[in-house]
Length: 631
Image (cartoon, rainbow, N blue to C red; front, side, top):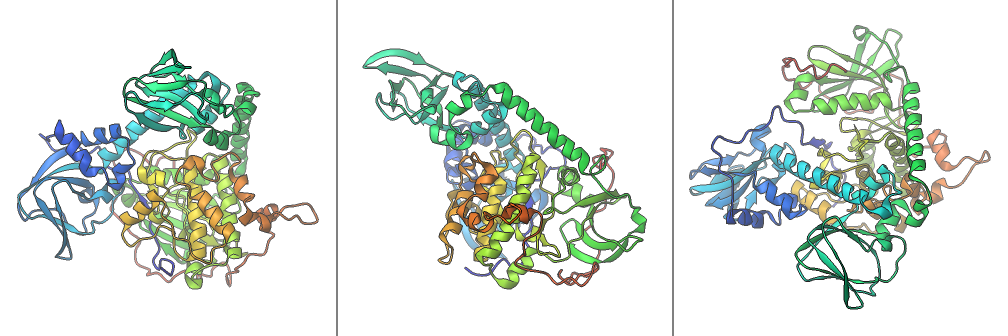
């Protein structure tokens, strides 16, 4: 495999459908043995494989049956929108899969198709036509994702409540408890199964979610425990031998928190127990107050810094085109230049992106950092929303990478460090970015990075969100699974970026998008021979499939990434003033590996020539919801 992607990659999102999807009148839901048959059909499917059995069952119960006569298609190649929102499991009959009119394979009883529709709206890659009278079980993306989110969210809250009842963990703050909630592993035991033997090494604690266990010490039963009870918790303090034997008396489900994971996320419990919970809370309050003050003083009251009249802006030329609009270079009456991003309201509503566009504005108004694009002002008219942005005229990192094929480790390290500092800053505001890729990294006049396009950025003070969004090559496994994600997804994308800069292609690339997701979920990576040991090490640590083990998430956060050997040799040295390489980088005092040629503030030469056709547009009719009132 060689060469970076030659075409710019578009981000994807499940979106917000206009209105709630309603099942067909008289829809027949599966029941009895049919539930098991459908569960068996989807068991190996990527989007079901990571779901708990109970979640899978709830999703299946939301399906309904449809029939297709011989020769009738249920999917047409190229379908988008609502027609590309359904997933099918074959109950009876047979379907032919056709690409450009030619049958390439078939799907029979017990098979399924259309799984990409469960993730986001994408054009159908093939036509699916009934070869005989056939029946299928169907589910809509909105119902699938809503069901998974509802159950996953409820389960997460249940796990948090269990942890609150563990006396040994009473000293933890709410944020610390939330952090380890995501680290709990669920395990099922049949009846009359030994969970652990007396004298075994103690490696973690157990919480009973369902079922019962009995505790024997020296062969004598000393206790019986049920739902909500905890055993083995002393193992979180020190790895002692188990003092008793624990056996299930019925089918039992437990939540396991192992000591290694606990220590990696929060540090030794003994040290934590020495600090009162009040000190954690007061520290959190102080940090929140400091962040609020920083937000308040970063610009004026709404974080924006100019007060221009829209009619005084004159277009110089086009910097780029996207799915929803154009970005143009403009100047004001004084000749000062800006980048003006115009977005069609009709396109926003058509694709359900109202929440994303409002979040983009709110996030950008908060943030002021040397490696982030600065938002100066916003405008709107009857058809469009506009962002007035800092102009960065050196072009996209994507173009540099495409022209050079791949970067040296020194070059890759420099740009990865830019992103690292930007993410560290964003995360201090509880903001997750979620769309890192070379196409979203602009190069300024000094050769430094400016991250752009905050359409998928979101404030997640709760520490967790469920929206599927990002760019396929860069999606973290927890986003693909749809079971909730946090800041760890950004550190995953940093690992992907480092790999792509060094190799010229992302680690999970495949022509078939679903195979890309399969590789992401299994962690299958091929390592080029020219990768150094430190480079391979940092990428592996950033690409841990379990976010609770991922570098950047574990205790130490971004500082652990900075101190990794791949960065350390480059940035650890200090200058005569005692400033570290990281300080000099933040102050833009280091020499960048590449300097773009920029003639003046109106130079468009570092951006691809684009047709000056009208920007993408869908007629917009105000529905009275006033969704853009605060733009």
